[in-house]
Image (cartoon, rainbow, N blue to C red; front, top):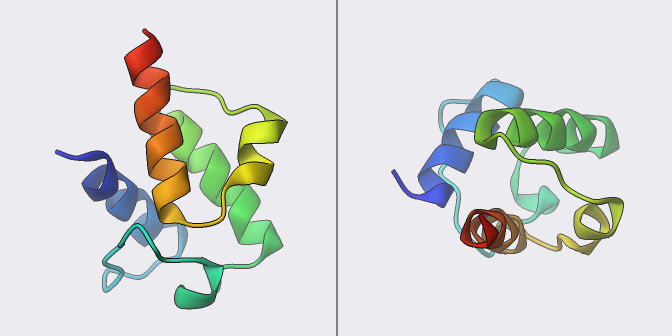
Length: 79
């Protein structure tokens, strides 16, 4: 399963929407209900789902799903 596929599963749970199909260029504007509070819940769910931790700097740098996915991939490459 790719990182985007795993993220899609997490997004579907966090946003309670089985219709979400993530693409790297997607942003908060593309997902109904994605606001600042749900973003916090999303980051926590991603960290738990992948067994990783993001720094505050990393979290602030995410501009789209692709940025998030690349950061996750880089964390696994460092191991």
